[in-house]
Length: 397
Ligand code: 3PG
Image 1 (tube, rainbow, N blue to C red):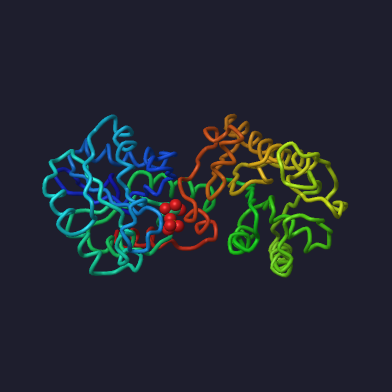
Image 2: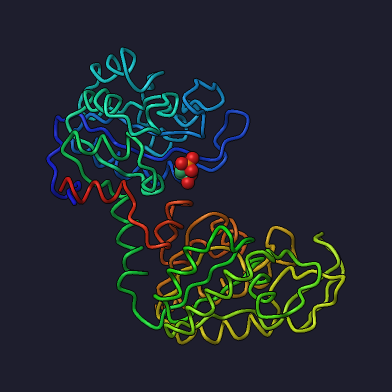
């Protein structure tokens, strides 16, 4: 790839694809971490006297100018992340508003353009729309790994129209994800949790051939237990996915992969904070109860195995962590991973969906070696898929 290590940006207008698709409530950003993580590239560009034009999507407005999906509320947290540097805003990403805003930029200045998805052409990877974007700059940097799984105009077609490279956050994501999965130090463990097998079939099928131990937790473990003939009572379980679960178990047997399922569980009659709980073997879940977390024996086993591991990739919680006390298994195994990471015995990489909230709840987010800013893109990457936004950068290099 080209990157800020190889591109000369001084005096140039640089289009930077960022991902400011951040949690927002009542017109206020409620979690600015993606914005803060994009600041490094922007700061480096302004220090090196580039004119910086930021492109992003927000939400899924499907080509309509939905006012609640404006990127304008991201300007204050962005300015804060840039230590008070003023950031301009153009209320369209193409046409006269964008062109005027860009023409007025001096080296070292920054403008953010309005939501790319206000134009339906963005999601269609439309060549004419990409031409209009390309017209605004001299160079293109993609710093949005978290949107790299979308073959959209600002992620894909645009990269073919200008000298292109990866921003610092994109570089950082790829470096850590490659270290964790492409060339990991072994033994390596993957923890995959979450509610449903149906959303993670490709991910499980890919990981089972790559890792030394694949720990399956959360609601999807119930589907595997059911497939193995256990009665899971009232637990969340996709009975129709039993064949798929068996196929994944068979693949593990055929290819020497090791799938680790819970052996005991914390069960209750309903999912409610403060409800009466019981611990039982997965072989004897009472018919009127549901599995809501992995049990202490499972936790102890996972912590012990983790001590022998050199790498862990984590996606998804081991129980219904939003409702205590069913966050205990996630918290304890995550704490063990954090402890081993701090002692330099483990490389720990996490990402995707609920994972950041689960690790934040466990109080260990900052102790992991690396936490990806990506949701869906992280999952597709674990599936072994080629991400269009990454591939196109390699091709244009
Ligand atoms: C994300 O939040 O995962 C990315 O910004 C992609 O958003 P999308 O799923 O709406 O394409």
